[in-house]
Length: 488
Image 1 (cartoon, rainbow, N blue to C red):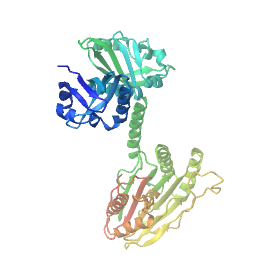
Image 2 (cartoon, rainbow, N blue to C red):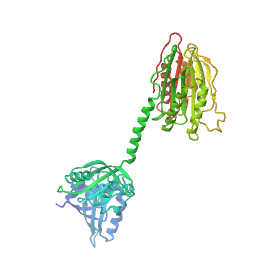
Image 3 (tube, rainbow, N blue to C red):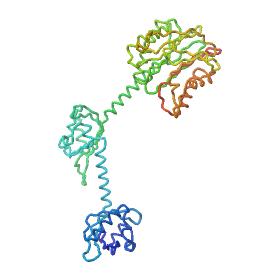
Protein backbone atom coordinates (compact mmCIF):
# COMPACT_ATOMS: atom_id res chain seq x y z
CA UNK A 1 0.00 0.00 0.00
CA UNK A 2 3.02 2.32 0.26
CA UNK A 3 3.09 5.33 -2.08
CA UNK A 4 6.88 5.05 -2.11
CA UNK A 5 8.56 2.58 -4.45
CA UNK A 6 9.80 -0.41 -2.38
CA UNK A 7 12.11 -3.00 -3.89
CA UNK A 8 14.56 -5.80 -3.26
CA UNK A 9 17.28 -5.97 -5.89
CA UNK A 10 20.41 -7.93 -6.56
CA UNK A 11 23.85 -6.54 -7.20
CA UNK A 12 23.68 -8.39 -10.55
CA UNK A 13 21.36 -5.58 -11.73
CA UNK A 14 17.89 -7.16 -11.49
CA UNK A 15 14.91 -6.46 -9.25
CA UNK A 16 13.81 -9.47 -7.17
CA UNK A 17 10.67 -7.89 -5.79
CA UNK A 18 8.84 -4.57 -6.37
CA UNK A 19 5.63 -3.21 -4.85
CA UNK A 20 2.57 -1.86 -6.60
CA UNK A 21 3.89 1.73 -6.41
CA UNK A 22 6.37 0.84 -9.16
CA UNK A 23 3.51 -0.05 -11.48
CA UNK A 24 1.49 3.01 -10.53
CA UNK A 25 4.42 5.37 -10.95
CA UNK A 26 6.17 3.99 -14.04
CA UNK A 27 3.38 2.11 -15.79
CA UNK A 28 5.39 -1.09 -16.29
CA UNK A 29 4.01 -4.41 -15.00
CA UNK A 30 5.83 -6.30 -12.30
CA UNK A 31 6.85 -8.99 -14.79
CA UNK A 32 8.38 -6.37 -17.12
CA UNK A 33 10.27 -4.79 -14.25
CA UNK A 34 11.62 -8.12 -12.96
CA UNK A 35 12.47 -9.53 -16.37
CA UNK A 36 14.78 -6.72 -17.53
CA UNK A 37 17.93 -5.25 -15.90
CA UNK A 38 16.88 -2.19 -13.96
CA UNK A 39 19.58 -0.17 -15.75
CA UNK A 40 17.43 -0.52 -18.90
CA UNK A 41 14.96 1.88 -17.28
CA UNK A 42 17.54 4.48 -16.24
CA UNK A 43 17.94 7.66 -18.26
CA UNK A 44 21.07 7.45 -20.45
CA UNK A 45 22.51 10.60 -18.88
CA UNK A 46 22.18 9.03 -15.40
CA UNK A 47 23.71 5.63 -16.22
CA UNK A 48 27.26 6.41 -15.18
CA UNK A 49 26.25 7.87 -11.81
CA UNK A 50 23.87 4.92 -11.19
CA UNK A 51 26.63 2.38 -11.92
CA UNK A 52 28.96 4.20 -9.51
CA UNK A 53 26.28 4.10 -6.81
CA UNK A 54 25.65 0.39 -7.48
CA UNK A 55 29.34 -0.44 -7.08
CA UNK A 56 29.41 1.37 -3.73
CA UNK A 57 26.38 -0.64 -2.58
CA UNK A 58 28.03 -3.86 -3.66
CA UNK A 59 31.01 -2.84 -1.56
CA UNK A 60 28.72 -2.49 1.47
CA UNK A 61 28.20 1.30 1.52
CA UNK A 62 24.54 2.38 1.96
CA UNK A 63 23.12 4.87 -0.50
CA UNK A 64 21.22 7.88 0.77
CA UNK A 65 19.53 10.67 -1.21
CA UNK A 66 20.67 9.46 -4.63
CA UNK A 67 18.64 10.76 -7.58
CA UNK A 68 18.20 9.39 -11.04
CA UNK A 69 15.51 9.27 -13.71
CA UNK A 70 13.49 6.16 -14.58
CA UNK A 71 11.73 5.71 -17.89
CA UNK A 72 7.96 5.23 -17.86
CA UNK A 73 6.06 3.00 -20.23
CA UNK A 74 4.95 6.08 -22.23
CA UNK A 75 8.55 7.19 -22.80
CA UNK A 76 8.59 9.99 -20.24
CA UNK A 77 10.84 9.97 -17.18
CA UNK A 78 10.17 10.28 -13.46
CA UNK A 79 12.83 11.58 -11.09
CA UNK A 80 13.33 9.17 -8.14
CA UNK A 81 15.13 9.83 -4.85
CA UNK A 82 16.68 6.57 -3.56
CA UNK A 83 17.70 5.22 -0.17
CA UNK A 84 19.31 1.78 -0.44
CA UNK A 85 20.97 -0.55 2.08
CA UNK A 86 23.00 -3.67 1.18
CA UNK A 87 22.33 -6.85 3.21
CA UNK A 88 25.46 -8.10 4.83
CA UNK A 89 26.48 -11.59 3.71
CA UNK A 90 24.32 -11.57 0.55
CA UNK A 91 24.02 -9.78 -2.76
CA UNK A 92 20.63 -8.29 -1.92
CA UNK A 93 19.84 -4.61 -1.82
CA UNK A 94 16.83 -3.18 0.02
CA UNK A 95 15.79 0.12 -1.58
CA UNK A 96 13.09 2.75 -1.18
CA UNK A 97 12.48 5.40 -3.87
CA UNK A 98 10.40 8.53 -3.52
CA UNK A 99 8.97 10.18 -6.67
CA UNK A 100 10.30 13.75 -6.54
CA UNK A 101 9.45 14.69 -10.13
CA UNK A 102 6.93 17.38 -9.28
CA UNK A 103 9.06 18.68 -6.44
CA UNK A 104 12.04 18.96 -8.79
CA UNK A 105 9.92 20.80 -11.32
CA UNK A 106 8.74 23.21 -8.69
CA UNK A 107 12.26 23.76 -7.48
CA UNK A 108 13.45 24.28 -11.06
CA UNK A 109 10.69 26.82 -11.63
CA UNK A 110 11.60 28.53 -8.37
CA UNK A 111 15.25 28.67 -9.36
CA UNK A 112 14.28 29.98 -12.79
CA UNK A 113 12.05 32.62 -11.24
CA UNK A 114 14.72 33.62 -8.75
CA UNK A 115 17.25 33.83 -11.55
CA UNK A 116 14.88 35.95 -13.63
CA UNK A 117 14.26 38.31 -10.71
CA UNK A 118 17.98 38.60 -10.09
CA UNK A 119 18.84 39.28 -13.73
CA UNK A 120 15.89 41.34 -14.92
CA UNK A 121 16.64 44.94 -15.85
CA UNK A 122 13.56 46.08 -13.93
CA UNK A 123 13.76 46.88 -10.23
CA UNK A 124 12.09 44.34 -7.91
CA UNK A 125 11.31 45.26 -4.29
CA UNK A 126 9.66 42.93 -1.77
CA UNK A 127 8.32 44.36 1.47
CA UNK A 128 6.50 42.77 4.39
CA UNK A 129 2.95 43.74 5.27
CA UNK A 130 4.21 46.74 7.22
CA UNK A 131 6.06 48.04 4.16
CA UNK A 132 9.58 47.22 5.38
CA UNK A 133 11.91 46.21 2.56
CA UNK A 134 13.00 42.58 2.79
CA UNK A 135 14.51 42.09 -0.67
CA UNK A 136 15.81 44.14 -3.60
CA UNK A 137 17.36 42.76 -6.78
CA UNK A 138 20.60 43.99 -8.40
CA UNK A 139 18.63 46.22 -10.78
CA UNK A 140 17.46 48.20 -7.73
CA UNK A 141 21.04 48.98 -6.85
CA UNK A 142 21.89 49.97 -10.44
CA UNK A 143 18.80 52.17 -10.86
CA UNK A 144 18.63 53.90 -7.48
CA UNK A 145 22.26 53.99 -6.40
CA UNK A 146 21.38 52.43 -3.02
CA UNK A 147 23.01 49.13 -2.10
CA UNK A 148 20.89 46.23 -0.88
CA UNK A 149 22.36 46.72 2.60
CA UNK A 150 21.24 50.35 2.63
CA UNK A 151 17.71 49.45 1.49
CA UNK A 152 16.95 46.38 3.63
CA UNK A 153 15.01 47.31 6.74
CA UNK A 154 13.98 50.65 5.24
CA UNK A 155 10.65 51.47 3.54
CA UNK A 156 10.08 52.63 -0.05
CA UNK A 157 9.94 56.16 1.38
CA UNK A 158 13.67 55.95 0.78
CA UNK A 159 12.89 56.82 -2.86
CA UNK A 160 10.33 59.53 -2.17
CA UNK A 161 10.87 62.53 -4.43
CA UNK A 162 8.43 65.00 -2.96
CA UNK A 163 6.66 65.31 -6.30
CA UNK A 164 3.52 63.56 -5.04
CA UNK A 165 1.26 64.86 -2.23
CA UNK A 166 0.80 62.81 0.99
CA UNK A 167 -2.74 61.83 0.01
CA UNK A 168 -1.35 60.13 -3.10
CA UNK A 169 0.68 57.70 -0.98
CA UNK A 170 -2.19 57.22 1.50
CA UNK A 171 -4.47 56.22 -1.37
CA UNK A 172 -1.90 53.71 -2.68
CA UNK A 173 -1.47 52.16 0.78
CA UNK A 174 -5.22 51.89 1.34
CA UNK A 175 -5.72 50.13 -1.98
CA UNK A 176 -2.85 47.71 -1.32
CA UNK A 177 -4.16 46.72 2.10
CA UNK A 178 -7.53 46.09 0.46
CA UNK A 179 -5.81 43.56 -1.80
CA UNK A 180 -5.84 45.67 -4.96
CA UNK A 181 -3.00 45.59 -7.47
CA UNK A 182 -1.76 49.17 -7.90
CA UNK A 183 -0.26 50.40 -11.16
CA UNK A 184 0.96 53.88 -11.93
CA UNK A 185 3.78 56.20 -12.90
CA UNK A 186 5.74 57.81 -10.07
CA UNK A 187 8.56 60.28 -9.86
CA UNK A 188 11.21 58.73 -7.60
CA UNK A 189 14.53 60.01 -6.34
CA UNK A 190 17.89 58.24 -6.54
CA UNK A 191 20.51 58.24 -3.81
CA UNK A 192 22.35 61.07 -5.51
CA UNK A 193 19.21 63.23 -5.61
CA UNK A 194 18.46 62.73 -9.30
CA UNK A 195 14.79 62.19 -10.05
CA UNK A 196 13.60 59.49 -12.44
CA UNK A 197 10.26 58.45 -13.92
CA UNK A 198 9.15 54.99 -12.76
CA UNK A 199 6.38 52.81 -14.14
CA UNK A 200 5.43 50.75 -11.10
CA UNK A 201 3.21 47.74 -10.36
CA UNK A 202 2.68 46.72 -6.72
CA UNK A 203 1.03 43.36 -6.06
CA UNK A 204 -0.19 42.11 -2.66
CA UNK A 205 0.98 38.54 -1.94
CA UNK A 206 -1.28 36.18 0.05
CA UNK A 207 -0.64 32.98 1.98
CA UNK A 208 -2.68 29.77 1.73
CA UNK A 209 -5.40 31.27 3.93
CA UNK A 210 -5.70 34.38 1.75
CA UNK A 211 -4.03 36.72 4.23
CA UNK A 212 -1.81 39.44 2.74
CA UNK A 213 1.73 38.78 3.91
CA UNK A 214 3.89 40.95 1.65
CA UNK A 215 4.01 43.23 -1.36
CA UNK A 216 6.02 42.79 -4.55
CA UNK A 217 6.83 45.94 -6.51
CA UNK A 218 8.19 45.81 -10.05
CA UNK A 219 9.56 49.15 -11.24
CA UNK A 220 10.62 50.07 -14.77
CA UNK A 221 12.73 53.18 -15.21
CA UNK A 222 11.04 54.95 -18.13
CA UNK A 223 12.92 58.23 -17.86
CA UNK A 224 14.67 57.79 -21.21
CA UNK A 225 11.46 56.50 -22.81
CA UNK A 226 9.57 59.59 -21.65
CA UNK A 227 12.40 61.81 -22.84
CA UNK A 228 12.36 60.16 -26.26
CA UNK A 229 8.58 60.46 -26.43
CA UNK A 230 8.80 64.17 -25.64
CA UNK A 231 11.54 64.57 -28.24
CA UNK A 232 9.42 62.71 -30.80
CA UNK A 233 6.48 65.00 -30.10
CA UNK A 234 8.70 68.06 -30.47
CA UNK A 235 10.22 66.61 -33.64
CA UNK A 236 6.81 65.92 -35.16
CA UNK A 237 5.75 69.47 -34.29
CA UNK A 238 8.93 70.86 -35.84
CA UNK A 239 8.39 68.71 -38.94
CA UNK A 240 4.84 70.01 -39.21
CA UNK A 241 6.08 73.59 -38.96
CA UNK A 242 8.80 72.93 -41.53
CA UNK A 243 6.29 71.35 -43.88
CA UNK A 244 4.37 74.63 -43.93
CA UNK A 245 7.52 76.45 -45.09
CA UNK A 246 7.35 74.68 -48.44
CA UNK A 247 5.10 76.28 -51.09
CA UNK A 248 1.53 75.08 -50.67
CA UNK A 249 0.67 75.75 -54.31
CA UNK A 250 2.83 76.32 -57.39
CA UNK A 251 3.15 79.70 -59.05
CA UNK A 252 0.78 80.51 -61.88
CA UNK A 253 2.67 81.74 -64.92
CA UNK A 254 1.09 81.77 -68.35
CA UNK A 255 2.53 79.03 -70.53
CA UNK A 256 4.40 77.28 -67.72
CA UNK A 257 3.64 74.18 -65.64
CA UNK A 258 5.30 73.61 -62.25
CA UNK A 259 5.55 70.71 -59.82
CA UNK A 260 7.81 69.80 -56.92
CA UNK A 261 8.22 67.08 -54.32
CA UNK A 262 10.43 66.51 -51.31
CA UNK A 263 10.91 63.40 -49.17
CA UNK A 264 13.08 63.66 -46.05
CA UNK A 265 15.25 60.74 -44.96
CA UNK A 266 14.17 61.36 -41.36
CA UNK A 267 11.60 63.42 -39.56
CA UNK A 268 13.25 66.69 -40.59
CA UNK A 269 14.37 67.84 -44.00
CA UNK A 270 17.71 69.39 -44.91
CA UNK A 271 16.57 69.94 -48.50
CA UNK A 272 14.80 73.09 -49.62
CA UNK A 273 12.78 74.20 -52.60
CA UNK A 274 10.84 77.39 -53.06
CA UNK A 275 9.04 79.71 -55.47
CA UNK A 276 8.99 83.44 -54.74
CA UNK A 277 9.00 86.81 -56.49
CA UNK A 278 12.10 88.93 -56.98
CA UNK A 279 12.20 92.70 -56.65
CA UNK A 280 11.63 93.27 -60.41
CA UNK A 281 8.63 90.91 -60.53
CA UNK A 282 10.51 87.94 -61.99
CA UNK A 283 9.86 84.47 -60.60
CA UNK A 284 12.61 82.84 -58.52
CA UNK A 285 12.93 79.06 -58.29
CA UNK A 286 15.23 77.80 -55.55
CA UNK A 287 16.52 74.37 -54.62
CA UNK A 288 19.09 73.74 -51.91
CA UNK A 289 20.69 71.18 -49.66
CA UNK A 290 22.45 71.49 -46.31
CA UNK A 291 25.27 69.00 -45.88
CA UNK A 292 23.90 66.07 -43.85
CA UNK A 293 20.30 65.74 -42.76
CA UNK A 294 18.32 66.02 -39.56
CA UNK A 295 17.08 68.67 -37.14
CA UNK A 296 20.20 70.87 -37.25
CA UNK A 297 20.18 70.92 -41.04
CA UNK A 298 16.46 71.70 -41.08
CA UNK A 299 17.06 74.73 -38.83
CA UNK A 300 19.83 75.97 -41.12
CA UNK A 301 17.59 75.55 -44.14
CA UNK A 302 14.79 77.50 -42.45
CA UNK A 303 17.28 80.27 -41.75
CA UNK A 304 18.45 80.18 -45.38
CA UNK A 305 14.86 80.44 -46.60
CA UNK A 306 14.24 83.51 -44.44
CA UNK A 307 17.41 85.28 -45.62
CA UNK A 308 16.75 84.36 -49.25
CA UNK A 309 13.19 85.67 -49.29
CA UNK A 310 14.28 88.88 -47.54
CA UNK A 311 17.00 89.61 -50.09
CA UNK A 312 14.59 88.91 -52.94
CA UNK A 313 12.80 92.10 -51.88
CA UNK A 314 16.02 94.06 -52.36
CA UNK A 315 17.78 92.42 -55.32
CA UNK A 316 16.77 90.95 -58.67
CA UNK A 317 20.18 89.57 -59.73
CA UNK A 318 20.44 85.90 -58.66
CA UNK A 319 24.25 86.09 -58.49
CA UNK A 320 24.16 89.07 -56.16
CA UNK A 321 21.52 87.38 -53.99
CA UNK A 322 23.62 84.24 -53.47
CA UNK A 323 26.79 86.27 -52.92
CA UNK A 324 25.09 88.33 -50.21
CA UNK A 325 23.44 85.23 -48.75
CA UNK A 326 26.86 83.62 -48.34
CA UNK A 327 28.04 86.59 -46.27
CA UNK A 328 25.07 86.24 -43.94
CA UNK A 329 25.31 82.47 -43.51
CA UNK A 330 29.07 81.97 -43.15
CA UNK A 331 29.39 83.33 -39.57
CA UNK A 332 26.53 81.12 -38.36
CA UNK A 333 27.67 77.77 -39.76
CA UNK A 334 29.90 75.43 -37.80
CA UNK A 335 33.11 74.18 -39.44
CA UNK A 336 32.49 71.57 -42.10
CA UNK A 337 28.89 72.67 -42.65
CA UNK A 338 27.85 74.29 -45.92
CA UNK A 339 24.83 74.84 -48.16
CA UNK A 340 24.52 74.17 -51.85
CA UNK A 341 21.89 76.32 -53.53
CA UNK A 342 20.71 76.78 -57.11
CA UNK A 343 18.62 79.88 -57.79
CA UNK A 344 16.84 80.41 -61.11
CA UNK A 345 15.37 83.72 -62.29
CA UNK A 346 12.53 83.30 -64.78
CA UNK A 347 11.05 86.32 -66.53
CA UNK A 348 7.29 85.65 -66.75
CA UNK A 349 6.95 87.91 -69.79
CA UNK A 350 9.81 86.75 -71.99
CA UNK A 351 10.19 83.24 -70.45
CA UNK A 352 13.94 83.74 -70.37
CA UNK A 353 15.84 82.18 -67.50
CA UNK A 354 19.07 83.04 -65.76
CA UNK A 355 20.61 81.15 -62.87
CA UNK A 356 23.31 81.18 -60.20
CA UNK A 357 24.55 77.88 -58.78
CA UNK A 358 26.41 77.88 -55.46
CA UNK A 359 27.96 74.40 -55.55
CA UNK A 360 24.65 72.59 -56.05
CA UNK A 361 24.04 69.54 -58.21
CA UNK A 362 23.71 70.77 -61.81
CA UNK A 363 20.22 71.38 -63.06
CA UNK A 364 19.26 70.37 -66.59
CA UNK A 365 17.26 71.92 -69.38
CA UNK A 366 15.80 69.22 -71.64
CA UNK A 367 14.10 69.55 -75.00
CA UNK A 368 10.72 67.87 -75.73
CA UNK A 369 12.51 64.67 -76.81
CA UNK A 370 14.42 64.41 -73.54
CA UNK A 371 17.77 65.52 -74.92
CA UNK A 372 19.92 67.77 -72.71
CA UNK A 373 20.03 71.32 -74.07
CA UNK A 374 21.92 72.88 -71.19
CA UNK A 375 23.46 71.89 -67.88
CA UNK A 376 23.15 74.44 -65.07
CA UNK A 377 26.71 74.02 -63.78
CA UNK A 378 28.12 75.65 -60.66
CA UNK A 379 28.91 79.35 -60.96
CA UNK A 380 30.42 79.56 -57.49
CA UNK A 381 31.31 77.52 -54.40
CA UNK A 382 28.77 76.33 -51.79
CA UNK A 383 27.55 78.88 -49.29
CA UNK A 384 29.02 79.16 -45.79
CA UNK A 385 32.52 77.86 -46.51
CA UNK A 386 35.35 79.46 -44.50
CA UNK A 387 37.24 82.36 -46.08
CA UNK A 388 40.33 80.32 -46.95
CA UNK A 389 38.17 77.87 -48.91
CA UNK A 390 36.28 80.63 -50.73
CA UNK A 391 38.40 83.80 -50.80
CA UNK A 392 36.40 85.56 -53.53
CA UNK A 393 33.02 84.79 -51.95
CA UNK A 394 31.31 85.55 -55.27
CA UNK A 395 28.62 83.51 -56.99
CA UNK A 396 28.18 84.62 -60.59
CA UNK A 397 25.00 84.68 -62.64
CA UNK A 398 24.76 82.84 -65.96
CA UNK A 399 23.91 84.31 -69.32
CA UNK A 400 20.20 84.52 -70.17
CA UNK A 401 18.71 81.41 -71.79
CA UNK A 402 15.27 81.32 -73.49
CA UNK A 403 12.83 78.63 -72.37
CA UNK A 404 11.36 77.28 -75.60
CA UNK A 405 8.12 75.37 -76.14
CA UNK A 406 8.23 71.86 -74.69
CA UNK A 407 11.44 72.51 -72.75
CA UNK A 408 11.67 70.95 -69.30
CA UNK A 409 13.77 72.53 -66.54
CA UNK A 410 14.76 69.97 -63.89
CA UNK A 411 16.33 70.81 -60.52
CA UNK A 412 17.31 67.92 -58.23
CA UNK A 413 19.17 67.27 -54.97
CA UNK A 414 21.91 64.65 -54.64
CA UNK A 415 19.67 62.30 -52.65
CA UNK A 416 18.13 61.20 -55.95
CA UNK A 417 21.36 60.03 -57.56
CA UNK A 418 22.53 58.48 -54.27
CA UNK A 419 19.37 56.43 -53.68
CA UNK A 420 20.45 52.78 -53.52
CA UNK A 421 19.04 49.45 -54.59
CA UNK A 422 19.07 46.52 -52.12
CA UNK A 423 22.43 45.48 -53.60
CA UNK A 424 23.94 48.94 -53.01
CA UNK A 425 23.84 50.21 -56.61
CA UNK A 426 23.16 53.98 -56.80
CA UNK A 427 20.23 55.30 -58.83
CA UNK A 428 22.49 57.78 -60.65
CA UNK A 429 21.91 60.99 -62.63
CA UNK A 430 21.72 59.26 -66.01
CA UNK A 431 18.95 57.01 -64.73
CA UNK A 432 17.08 60.02 -63.34
CA UNK A 433 17.38 62.01 -66.56
CA UNK A 434 16.36 58.94 -68.54
CA UNK A 435 13.13 58.65 -66.55
CA UNK A 436 12.44 62.37 -67.00
CA UNK A 437 13.15 62.22 -70.73
CA UNK A 438 10.89 59.22 -71.17
CA UNK A 439 8.02 61.20 -69.63
CA UNK A 440 8.77 64.50 -71.35
CA UNK A 441 5.30 64.65 -72.85
CA UNK A 442 3.63 64.38 -69.43
CA UNK A 443 2.70 67.30 -67.21
CA UNK A 444 5.21 68.61 -64.70
CA UNK A 445 3.32 66.72 -61.99
CA UNK A 446 3.40 63.58 -64.12
CA UNK A 447 7.19 63.88 -64.49
CA UNK A 448 7.62 64.31 -60.73
CA UNK A 449 5.40 61.33 -59.99
CA UNK A 450 7.20 59.16 -62.56
CA UNK A 451 10.62 59.97 -61.09
CA UNK A 452 9.42 59.46 -57.49
CA UNK A 453 7.89 56.10 -58.44
CA UNK A 454 11.05 55.02 -60.27
CA UNK A 455 13.19 55.81 -57.21
CA UNK A 456 10.90 53.87 -54.85
CA UNK A 457 10.82 50.89 -57.21
CA UNK A 458 14.63 50.98 -57.54
CA UNK A 459 15.11 51.09 -53.76
CA UNK A 460 12.72 48.18 -53.30
CA UNK A 461 12.36 48.76 -49.57
CA UNK A 462 15.95 49.89 -48.96
CA UNK A 463 16.14 52.61 -46.32
CA UNK A 464 16.47 56.14 -47.70
CA UNK A 465 19.89 57.54 -46.85
CA UNK A 466 19.42 61.19 -47.77
CA UNK A 467 16.70 63.74 -48.36
CA UNK A 468 15.25 63.71 -51.88
CA UNK A 469 13.89 66.83 -53.59
CA UNK A 470 12.91 67.60 -57.19
CA UNK A 471 11.50 70.66 -58.98
CA UNK A 472 10.18 70.58 -62.54
CA UNK A 473 9.25 73.58 -64.71
CA UNK A 474 7.85 72.81 -68.14
CA UNK A 475 6.97 75.24 -70.90
CA UNK A 476 3.72 74.24 -72.52
CA UNK A 477 3.73 73.34 -76.18
CA UNK A 478 0.54 75.28 -76.91
CA UNK A 479 -1.93 76.59 -74.35
CA UNK A 480 -1.04 77.95 -70.92
CA UNK A 481 -1.41 75.49 -68.03
CA UNK A 482 -0.98 75.50 -64.28
CA UNK A 483 0.69 72.83 -62.24
CA UNK A 484 0.74 71.59 -58.73
CA UNK A 485 3.18 71.48 -55.87
CA UNK A 486 3.19 68.81 -53.24
CA UNK A 487 5.33 67.40 -50.47
CA UNK A 488 5.90 63.65 -50.64
